Image (tube, rainbow, N blue to C red; front, side, top):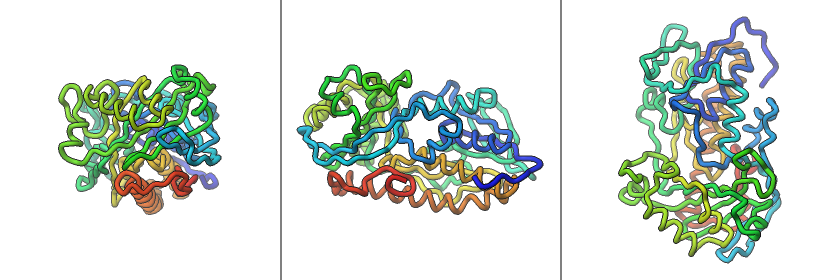
Length: 398
């Protein structure tokens, strides 16, 4: 943030959405001097969402500031292998990794529980003179100077403020899972000790890498191994089938662990046995938990609505190939804090400064992630060792 400006009264802020983007923004605005309350729709603390996270600099910056980056780990090698496990390409790299649970719990520990309200779903937004009112579940209402809507890809706020914008299915899903490193063979542990490993398949690809274990340990043998396997399911009957759970309920975006139908699990495991390199197949077949995340694009043409704003996935949903979804939400939070600082606490002026650069960033990262996904999943053009195929919010490595 820029040099501190003396402000007699910082705005009161309500944040709808208590995941990583909402918590990051809440911490940054509270550090600035704002009174901040976070309202999370879930009645219980949020559970693991997809396990592994690549920690880009904009995300780690806040953890470092508050001394909470001990559970972020580095891997030395970025490798591609073929179906036999032979290494096709190996490049030194320094990306940082953690688990979703580790970073969420770290941010919640920084923010604290006193102003973090579970079971508080946003249901309506009403602009008022000089403020904004948020209606919550349970017939509750809160008034604030600024409402930050960080309520995810299925954002209630976006549906209220920008109903014509909705997620577009990309044509494929990510099978995601976590395996205890301790149950893997010695050969698999050796392969994964210090490497992120990719395998490119026919209009498909998988990546596997280590993350902190359930107790936060980053010691070899005590970590978890995360896999993300992208597989195509055309929109329509195929997609509807894979997203229909064991109870016959059609899930909109995610199939949580335990909800995937047995026939789909069996087909996935059979394909893993036949098509994946031995180490990668072992990780998939020994997974403790498996979930499905449908892949979407989402682009909003506005982020500001008087004293309310959309942030993170509520405004732009980024395909995971750039590993920048969480980073984009964090960048929005950093930029909002900076804009409030520059505007001397004036909410309307700050949002005016903030919106256009974040729209431009959102369009750029969504476009890059879409191109990466279509290159490999639709056009089948990804080549092992491609130097442009790297994680990053602003570009490869950034």
